[in-house]
Amino acid sequence: MNAIDVLSDLFLIIGAAFFLAGTIGLLRFPDVYTRLHALAKVDNLGLGFTLLGLLFRVEDVASGLKLVLIWLLVLAASTAVSFLIARRARRRGIAYWQAERQP
Amino acid sequence: MNGLLLPLALFLLLNLLAAMVRVVRGPTAADRLLAALLFGTTGVAVLLLLAYAGGGPGLVDAALVFALLAAITGAAFAQRAWRREKGESEHERY
Image (cartoon, rainbow over all chains, first blue to last red; front, side, top):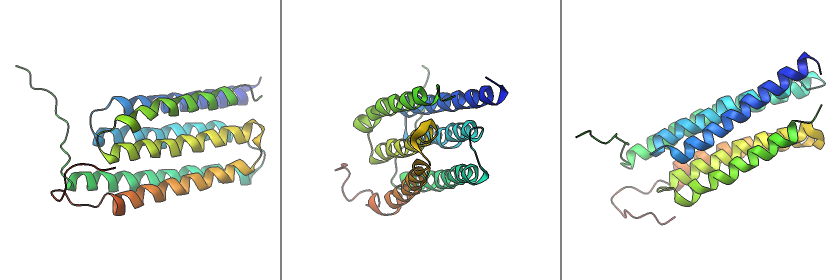
């Protein structure tokens, strides 16, 4: 087991941890705006670290470039869709979450 | 050196199972759509892990299509499906 394999496994595990964090955030956060934040972590960091771990395993340049292309596509799509959903939710008057006032 | 890929794919599938709770509970349609977008991204990751665990390079192309469809789904939802203005009918029917 050489250093390449160790690095690959390490990045894959970090990516899976971000997937877990994003899922927990989607379940626990109080409103749609904060849940967008959790989803952004999954899209950017979770998939990013997973693809970085897989990049150590590719055989040729073309398949590596395809992985990078998937990540860039997901990055752009995540940004655009988050903006659209947040703007639509705000126009529909969905209230922001506020912490309970301390008595 | 494929020992880690299949357990990680299984772990991501368990994540999806947990995220189903948000689909059931989510108060607005947008919360359910966010869970669907999470399914899309996690499905991409699972397909890529399976592709490098011996599934063959075709799964990478399938993952690319999944990513594209998730983007189109989110944009179509925000621009078309969720467009009914507030005040017409307040209750969520979907």
